[in-house]
Every structure is written in C-alpha cells, then in structure tokens.
Image (cartoon, rainbow, N blue to C red):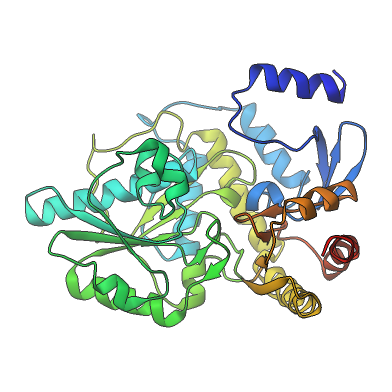
Length: 396
C-alpha cells in the first residue's frame, strides 16, 4: 500500500480515538525515524518516552528474536527465567523488593491502587478507604487510573468513576495534609508531572509526603511511568530526591517498545495475596527477555550518565531559547524530560517542525514536550534546534 492507501484504510478500520498526523512511519535507526516515502525525521518524542535506547538497537533486537524462537508465552501458573531475571534486575535498580509485571502503565496504576486498598483492608478490617491524588496529574485512561487523574477534561465523559478519591495541589504539602482523613490509605504522585505540563516535584514536597505517610501509616505511590527508567538523570526519579515510595509504577522505557509495565512494592506494601490480582500476558517470557535486556543495556551503554550530560546541555539550550522569545513564557524540566510553555497553542509549531524533519509532541495545548531517546548527543540537540528555531522565527 502507498501512503495514502494506508491512511485511508486506517481511517476506515481503526477506531478514531487519535487525531493522527499524516505520516506513515516505516522504520527507525538510532534517533531517527523514516516514513514510508523515505523521509528522515529527528525524533524528540521517542514514542512518548518509550524508545530510550533508540531505534534498531542490534543487541536488543537479537535478545527478542532469540526468545521468540524459545518460548513466547506460558502463563503465570508457571515460572519462566526471563521474567525472574528481569524482576531481580528491576529490584536491584530500584531499591524496592517485589515486582508484578503488567502489560502497560495504566495497568500498573490499577495494581498500585488495588495494593493500597488491600493494605488498608488488612490493617483496618473494613473497606471504604480513600486515596489522595494531585490536580493536573495524569495516570492513565482505564476507569481506576482515570479516577486519580486530576483533569476534568479526561474524566467528565466517563463519570461516575471510582469513589473515595480526593485531590490536592502538586508541590503544596499543606494542601495534601488538608485532604487526609481517617479513611486515607494512599497518596499517589508523579515525581515529574508529564501530561500536566512538565512540572518537577520539589524535594521538600516529596520528603514531606514521605514523612506524612510514615506518620499516618499511609502508602506513598510514585508514578514513574514516564519519568522513570533514567529519564531524569537517575535510574528512577525517586533516587534523585532520595525518597523511596512504598509502591512505584513503571512502564514505557522498561520494554523499549515491547508492551510491558510493572508495579513495585516494598515489603510493607506487598499486601496482595494469591487470587487478588492477575494478568494473562503480564511477565511472559517474551516481555521478560525484553525488559531484562533493556536493564542490561542501560548499564553497558551508560544511559544514566548520558542523560546527565546531554540533559544539562539541553536544559541550557532551551533556557537560552526561552529567553529569546516573548511568547515562550516558561521552561521547565530535568534530565531529558523538558517542556517549553508558550502563550499560544503549539499545534502549528509541531506540524511545521514535522514538515522540516523534526518530531515533537505537546503536553497540553500550549506546551512543547521534549522526551527524546536517552542516547541522544549534544550534536542531536544542536540539530533539533537548527530545525526548531527557524520555525519559531516564522510563527512567533
């Protein structure tokens, strides 16, 4: 099929829940994507923070191919070595104790919420507990994850959602304390709000949440689906702050394109019992092999160190860019997750940059989001700016 035929059949057969750009992507290499007509794009989206290792990493590809030839799936009634190895490596990298593999970030959130409710039920002997989430947060689109997503735009068409959710203001500890009741069983927070506009938490806020949860016997849940796996310059964002949660969710870069997520618990929060939770595909040998290899490659390729180096360079360059244009009202970010906030919608900027060979995405209507592969170089940052800045000069 040619490009037009692919798009026409996509519109005919795929449920229209995405407003797709008129591109048919065909293959990738390193930090570049290529469309079906051979055009090259510098990718500063990485499949929405997924392809941390870049495209067509030979070692990663070979690990998946080798597992395909051995065993793809068996079910969780049995052990399989790749997922046990991946779990061990994830525990060692995170400082947590137990892992449950899921198929997606949203499912990881569902498991984290169930963990908190089960913990409180065992502790108190009654149900009806409450969870505190943050305004402007994003945790996913299933009904449970949507219930703790602090954005009415996502929630309103699907109400009523699950009950017992209270919302507080991000980076405002007193706002959180005001929502605590005798029913509170958990507080869920993103160390860096992604969809909400690229807002990093303050260390004071996260340390305050940890102290509050310890005092009240409340579970602290960190959503690291987007900001984890090296993106902030430490393997997990919680390590940057020196604050360990009781439960942590991960996904996206954990599988580098293979659909796998996980929620991790410390011993205290390991409350789920046989029969409480399950998944048909989660943690099967194929995704276990993928996650295990990703964790190996993070070490051998020195991914976290590269994020620290190139992230500082990107921060410097975006700060300078923001100072040049009156319509750029803020720059926020850490590591290789950054946002430029504009006083106008950014849709036209994204489309024009795409025409010139640069893939960017938004976070809300007026924020450009930069979440490139974690293997980018300073030269890639310069190449990105060489495309973006003429677009800004033309449109701002």
